[in-house]
Amino acid sequence: MPSTLTWIDHDSEARERSLRILALFQEKESRDELGLGGIRDSFADQLFPGTSTIQTRLRYMLFVPWIYKDLEERRVAPGDFARRADAAERDLIDTMRNVDEREAGVFGGRSGRQLKRLPSSVYWAGLGSWGIRVADLSQDQYHRQIGAIYNRRKEQAARDRERSKIGDDADKAPAAGTVTWHPRLPEPPEDFPDEAEFALTQEEASFLLDRIQRSHPDSLLAHLALHCEPAEIAAPWEHPDMAGFSPKHIELLDHARMFSSVMHGAALIYNIALAEERGWLDKQEEHEATLDAWLTEIDMAEVRNWSLSHLWGLTMDHGHTITPPTQRFVEQWVAAVIARGEGIGEDDSARKLVRRREISVKNGRSRFTNRRALDQWGGSSGLGRMTYRWPNASTFLEDLYDGLHREGEG
Image (cartoon, rainbow, N blue to C red; front, side, top):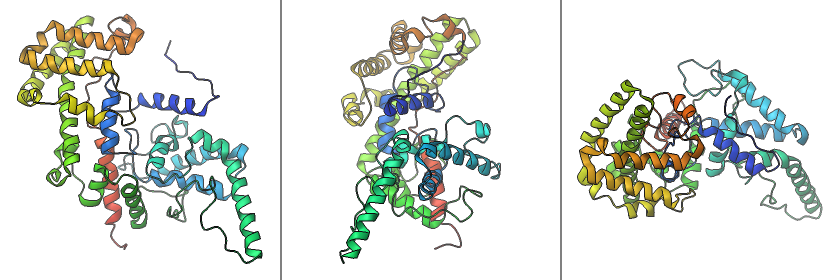
């Protein structure tokens, strides 16, 4: 019987949290077998705020508000608003499936209208983070409060008319709770949503660049968007323009690189231990060979000089929980790497450390204590190196660059 996740839909915030949990199962970097996601996401949010690993193309940052703004302008009834928004997004799936097949990133490209998670829920947090969504509401709250928003707008319009009659100027600033989307949101193309593509116009790209710069001026995302051309690299610390990054960005990237590299060894030990537990000799040998390669590439002198207290200073208190047990595990693993060096693959204490950590994170779902979970293991898990949403951020940056330099505009 498949596992399920259920919640009672009384609390919109609880519903949003549940959707985020469900989304984790789709994320490329989210196989957080050893409970390191808080540290990973702290780095990612500082480097590339507003992004996530299940976002695809940048123009969805406009598609979503265009759909909702159109519904608002047509004053779709509150009781029908959520359903009509859902239908409009599914109609967009049909439109986008006609896009050239070489264009990657179409939501619903395979599942079509049966898609379970729509772009609006994937981009909702990012739209708020970048200040494109002005209403400080969860998506569910927005749906439920649209009637109140309509009423507040109607009341403000009435006040403005009364002031006009007596010669007073209308309020220059909109009343609180009446604005949902940024006032300078570019208008959609005339044929949207019947026709759509991922290419940004210069106006759209300039708006998005402005939003990134104003919302997160100190982020690496803002620096790259403003100063750098797209780069085909596997991780942000490989960027050819890194010498021009700020000291803060270089420091973050150095620690992010170290954390990704050092903790990859723990993931390899985890998979070796699972293969051994299951008696899967081929997989065990495969992961042991990868561990050997990892040991040849890691700079032990750099690991010995790595300041973990500095790591915690950079990652704590940035909106993600990093528990004392998580800190202890990382510190114990780094100590084991330093102490055992090339012999860590045969070190029983290192393997026990990883085993204990996975059991403490997963409890009854641990593959070490739950035979069914072990039997369902596919042979490798959590082995993707942490690059802190770089694949998604780099796609955004390429879309943005192409829009800003689009021929025939400007």
